[in-house]
Image 1 (cartoon, chains in turn red, cyan, green, purple):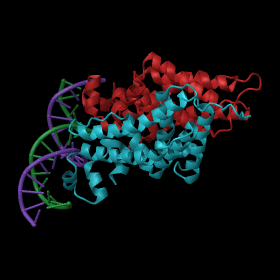
Image 2 (image 1 turned 45 degrees about the horizontal axis):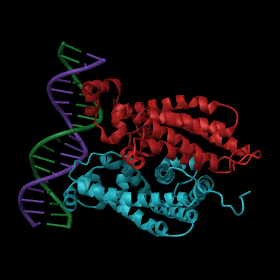
Image 3 (image 1 turned 90 degrees about the vertical axis):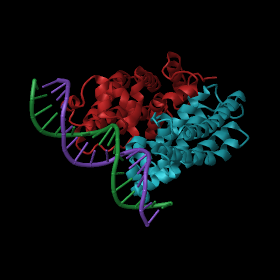
Length: 201
Length: 201
DNA sequence: GTCTATACTACGATAGAC
DNA sequence: GTCTATCGTAGTATAGAC
């Protein structure tokens, strides 16, 4: 699959030939389905973003206690990223990489950017609502989003390095479960304001 | 500088020609200083890692209250990453990217990996010491390191995306100052255990 | 230590047969 | 819709003059 190749080595690091071999076609056949390499790459990226958005939608649209909503979002995001080892890497590349797509695929680029903006806009609203309601500490929403992205997307994109650090595969069921627990624990203590009724001690 | 080029577009995305033009030399002259493109890239990466280690050393070697040491490390790490816009991007690539350096530059690759391991080993010890001393909550040290890396390295590597999210340049003095404050606040509440004397409320 | 020239390969992309 | 063949460019790397 082209997705795995681009996730591992990025837009510039993968050749059309390689993709063609992986899907069992000739180079030229790929150009019949995608006008250029940039179109192919952006189509793959957008598909990943759409999948994330779909997985996150229920949790992001839920109503109720902000802290509970946040927990649900963390669970959904981690589940979405842990589903395929390629997802986080591709997403991380889309976030920080500054490839030159030549302007020919401007429409596909904007489609991906808009999907990303929709997802982040909902996270932003969740955080701001929670702060306004007094459920969260008065943090900066953008900075918290960045921390959240780093703690999830980067984590599952860290590949062999992450495996070595954890001492076990990043995508093992145990490591995924632990990631959720660690992250929710940190946020519950660090972001959620203690309620009046019943201290934690 | 080659550092800026590799930071922006990665190992595969930059050509020797481009680097040569940037430093005002001919292509062939570069091969006189570096045996191959991989050697050049890894030399750049290692230099960045060494710079980080140098900047972090004082904070990591300090003694005293674990919470204060952690704060000092956050400050030092953010300062190091904020010094040049290329540092975090190059570092992030080194962490998650899986380029094929052809095995010819195995020695340079190991040198970079060892420097990275030294830095992370010290962070690991700081966290474990703090947990053992009862100053930190009983979190997973590797997971916390991943969160920390994501919250710092990813953040300063996020480029235009981060600029847009924050509404101001990532590397502006105000944004850097805010990053430190947000991060230290999250960790003080989320990682550091409240002391017996004097609750926060 | 830097240059020109070149070898050789791979790249993205196109044309046209089937 | 897939193929073979090919174009033009750019890639890494080497050889050898200065």
